[in-house]
Image 1 (cartoon, one colour):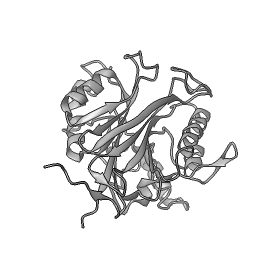
Image 2 (cartoon, rainbow, N blue to C red):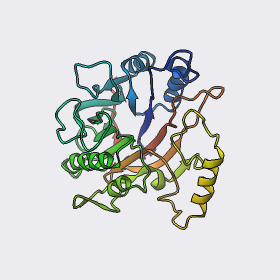
Image 3 (cartoon, rainbow, N blue to C red):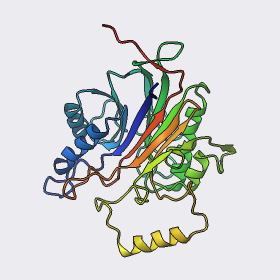
Image 4 (cartoon, one colour):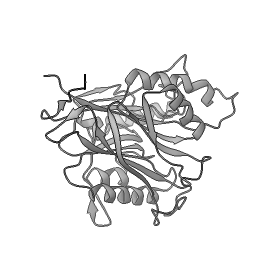
Length: 310
């Protein structure tokens, strides 16, 4: 019997309002962006820093997907950035979803706390896989998509704690995939908290990282997911950092990357089979200043394909 799986991609769309003459403008990279998505056909696509024009273009080119999410300034705003979740509409039904602000006032649109430089949000959705049957109809899981503050370590730590508290409040048997742009490395206090290796306000996170736990990993040499539109080109400083990292005694499967874009998960039903850093480009034009991350999660053997109506 063939294994069934859920695939997830996280993709930072980055600065969709650059001038059209810029070599990295949205107009010049939107086709490779669509090409990457259609090539990998993720069940769930989590985008960060997307503007309405970018999201509308993706929706136009991806008719098999629906999208969910609001601006970080609130549902009435269409000018600012979104953390949008796209999902394959023939495989997945959205049963519930929402957005909260990563601040001391999580229900207040546009709210900012802890030294953050801009509003940050987490968009979440509980999805129901239409093509699957367990003993009850469907296989439910929650997706959480975020983009943490770029400048304030305290804001990232507190935002991670707030989001993890949301995840911890869910039924323990509901699998969760938590992904997006964390703007810090996994050895930071934010990463160590989420991965259960340090405390934040007296509690310890219990997420797992798809990258070191996947049975197969692709493009392991790409230790940075942020590349600033340079792709695989490394400057002298970055090369020295890489050499130092390679010689570091703490080099192991848990810490041997400098990724700032992560796919974390929680729940026994999810088994990471594959995780890949995607470096697709067209003549040196990349989808974003960040490499997308793609992961495939195997589902339990008790899950079966539904019989489609004839």
